Structures are given as C-alpha cells and as structure tokens.
Length: 633
Ligand code: COA
Ligand code: AMP
Image (cartoon, rainbow, N blue to C red; front, side):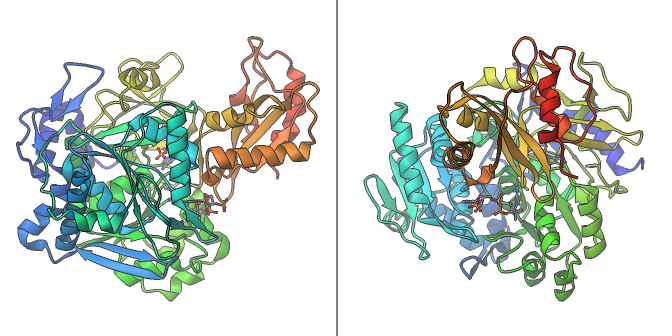
C-alpha cells in the first residue's frame, strides 16, 4: 500500500488521538472550544470534547451566512413523484429553520426534549431536523416505510413532546397516508401506558391533505402563529443531537445516540478527507433521511462544510425511468453521488447497457460512493465501466455515523480493489478476531471489531440504556466494539466485509431484524415455531425467508397461513420488510439444547458447504431442509 498521507494520518489518529481530533475540531465553530479531546474516566463509555460547547445547526447554516455565503445554494429539492422542485439558499434555509424552531419552542420544546420526525423526503424533513438541533432538542427520525407498531415502539422509547409528520408520502405505486399511521401508533403507545406526545404537527401536502383531529395541528398555522424565530441554543458537545433507532438482534430497536460535538467534527473531517467535497460543491446522497446515511450525508455533513445538498423524492427506476439518477446528477451539476448498490442493480435491471447514462451530460460527476450493503463486483464493474468515474465502496453502520473503512478520496486516493471497502479511516482501530478474541492473520475471516475508544461521531451509548450498549457491543470482546459484521483484512491492509454474524439482514439497503419478523410469525395461533433468515437476492441483496412449523392439530390451509403471515409482517413491521416468502416445514434443525441452527441454515442458503454441527439433535431434519434452502441455480 501507499505510504503517503493516508498512512501518516491513520497512524497519528491512533498514536496521538488527542492532537489529531483537537486539530480536526478546528473545522467547527465552537461557543466554547474544547480543551480536552477525550474523557475516558467512565470507560468503556467514552465521551469526546467534554468541555466544548456549540450548536450544530448554527454550524450547518448561520456560520455560512455570517461569513457572507448566505446567497449560495444550500438545498435543492427534486421530487419526480410530485413534479415539484425547490431551492434554498443558506440564508433562506437558516430563516426557515429559525422559524420552525420558534414554532417548536412555542409548543413547549426546549433543550433536551425529544421530537419524533416522521416525514417523507420533503425539505421540511431537513428543516425539522435542523430546527431541533437549533433548540438543543433531540430529533428521532422514523423511516416512512415502517408500520404503526414500529413507530409506536420508537415513540414509546423516545417519549417525544411533539411528532412532526405530513399528510402523506408518495411512493411510485401509491400514496401513503401518514396521519392514520401516526394515530394508530399513538393508540399503541397509549395501550402500553407510555406517555403520549403533546402535539402532532401535520404538514399538509396537496397530493393528499389530511382531516386533522384531536391533538393534531396544521404545520403552516403553527409556524405562522409563532412570530419569534429561535436563535441557536448552545449545548455541550456531549449533549445528544439525535436518536436513530436501528434493528438489532431482538425485536426491540436500539436507540443509537449521536452527540453534537464529536458528530460535527467527524462529519466535517469526512466530507473533505473521504468524499473530497467542500464549499460550493454539489453533493447528492440518494438515500432517505430516515436512515443514518440520510442523517449524515443528506443533511448534516454537506451543510457543515458549506456544500449544496440534493434531496431527492423519487426512486432510481420508475420515477419516471432508469435515467432518473443521471438526469438529476446532470441537471444540478452533481460532483459526487452517494447511494446504495441495490439502487444501481435496480437501474441495471431496467437498463442493462446503461444507455440512459449516455443521454445526459455527467461532466461534473467525479465519484460515485456506495454503501449500505456489500458492493458485489458485478455491480462495481457495471457502474465503473458505464460511468467512467471511480466507484468507491465504503463500510459503515448506523452506530458509527460515518465510514469505518473507505478510500479517502480527498486525503489520498488509493487503488480500488473490487469487493473491498478499502482501508480503516483514522480513529478506527479495526481488528479481525477469532472466537477466543485472538487476532486473525491477513486473509483469514473473523469477527470485525474495533478497539476502544471509538472515534468522535460514533455512538456514545444507546438511548437511556448504557447497560444494553455495553452488553450488545462491548462485552463480547472486552476493550472492543463488536460491529456484528465478519470479514478479513488482506496483506495490503484492505478490509473485505463479508456479512453479518447476527440476525440483522439488509434488504434493498434497509437494515432489518429477522428476530423481529420471527416474533410476528410466532404470534400466529397456528405456528409452533419458526425461523427467518436472509437469503441472497439479485436485486435487493437479501430477502427474508421464513420457515414455520405448524402446531399439532392446527386447522389452516398452507395457502391461508402464508397469506396471513405475509400480511402480519407487513402490518407489524412495514412494507419495507419485503417479506413474501415463507415455507411450512415439518421441523427446524436444532441443537440438542433446543437452539435453532439459524447460522447453519443461512450458510446452506448462501450455497456454502458447511459441516453438520456436532451438536445437532437430528441431522435428518437438516437434510430434508437442504432442498428448500439451497439457492436456485
Ligand atoms: N414510505 C412508505 N413506504 C415505503 C417507503 C417510504 N419511505 N419506502 C419504501 N416503501 C415501501 C415501498 O413502496 C414498497 O412497498 P410495496 O411492497 O407496496 O411495493 C416496500 O416499502 C419495499 O420498498 P423498497 O425496498 O424500497 O423496494 P422498491 O421495490 O420500492 O424499490 C429499490 C427498490 C432498490 C429501487 C429501492 O429500495 C431503493 O432505492 N433502495 C435504496 C435504498 C437506500 O437508499 N438505502 C439507504 C442506505 S444508503
Ligand atoms: P445500517 O446500520 O443500516 O447502515 O447497516 C449497517 C450494516 O450494513 C453493516 O453492519 C453491514 O452489514 C452492512 N453494510 C453497510 N455498508 C456496507 C459495505 N460497504 N459493505 C458490506 N456491508 C455493508
């Protein structure tokens, strides 16, 4: 590997993290600059910049306006599903955010209060997040494709004062009315005995307006009524900026906490060093604000560095065609595009030759960044050959907030190795460990762990649950953070991420828990036991596949049971689970102590040759399942 800037910076970040991160912190405007980088007095819980004070929204907006760059474009909204577009300068966006923050304050929202944001990809989703940040309130954005029960779980855990929502979202195939979903979620929250939000504020969209009921307020009326815009409220660097719930190994989502200071420092650093994007550049992340990629790279990072960010309410295909991405990139002069491999596979399926690419002028496009799931080499080659720009895979998680491994295009572009997310970024001391915690040699697969402390920007804890943070991530290998992914590092130090070691699956770039799906299947009166695993899918990367065993004497046709189970997962988790495939089997493979051998099932489904575990209770059960599990050839 090259021994240039990357290696030098990487070593410095691990050998002298204090000076590395205090230097990086200069990119941020502080109300009180930090004098200390790391607080390790409560290890294994670490905090960054413990005595620093700042406001993240002021860094994202006001500082650019104050520096005379207020007339630059901050946000471009492009919505092929409604036919609308809009643009906001930094000054306009700051003013919108200050007004909405004033409105939230008039509803009683202050520093530390939570606000749940359940919005489609409209500019108000961005202003909602930034308005919370301006007040020092904590936003929790919930992805629109989740069902009421998932929304309720998040409301119950975050206990928000206000829920910000819209009358509807627009999917290519249908209009999704949000207000009934929010009402149902509130009912579920009430049933649990959890506190309900004081207000639901509804953005009326002309596509489908909502009749407002009890406790529901009209967004524009609330904003108009609040006549005083809010100024940025200084918060501690360690105060929470947001909570983003993500799937874990159980049904209960984990509330990943992001702080203000470490987040701003890490994102600003990544924007120039990893993505090579700075003031005035047009940057487009084609994801959703409901996911971490949307939080970090649609909203915060591009605005922190004074770039122009594109917010796209559409799909890669069907809105209206497979040229949509190239149209947007060309129309706005996008310098770098970031999306998930599944989006490219969707385009490739409709336009295998990439003919649409040639019909647009992509002269400004320098780089395509991909993350969210493994980048398969075919998709890598297709995109790099058709687009003629570097295609950069990089690996990260909701928990980490920014890339653990990447090819740092701004710091030092390194050679690309297809199939690899390239090299660990500064601050990420990546280790490949075996079962007993010993490091594995180059080329050998193991659990990917990161030595503590994690760098700024990574989660300091889970919302209200330090114990779960420690037991989920820090206990398996003491002194390390467990990523839940497995992989290996080659002799050049390149990291290859191979897949999850737990029950998390990745469907079209959406992270889901098979444990949560199993809980839904198990609740059916005819189901005795069940397992859900992720199986490879050429479009979505993975799809969930369920296996159920009927209760003795269950009186239901297989067809009816499958219909019931598919409907139940859609109703309880949401359409985003894409759960359509479930088989009734006579038994599930288990250990003698009764544990279902899900990992073995997963490996067979992946086409890997796995030995029959010695602990298996009845090897014949596995043999009978093999045909159902094997990938179709
Ligand atoms: N609100 C409501 N419903 C939503 C939704 C939202 N925000 N997002 C998705 N859904 C629904 C879809 O309408 C679909 O419903 P259906 O079963 O009635 O058709 C279902 O959830 C599954 O959606 P999705 O997985 O998005 O599949 P799709 O077939 O609509 O589109 C892709 C497939 C690949 C084009 C699309 O998933 C995509 O663009 N993925 C990129 C993912 C991404 O950005 N990930 C973030 C990490 S970078
Ligand atoms: P999320 O928290 O939704 O961002 O999902 C994180 C998970 O997605 C990781 O733990 C990986 O399993 C997977 N993932 C994300 N990016 C990549 C990548 N570049 N290569 C392989 N897997 C990835």
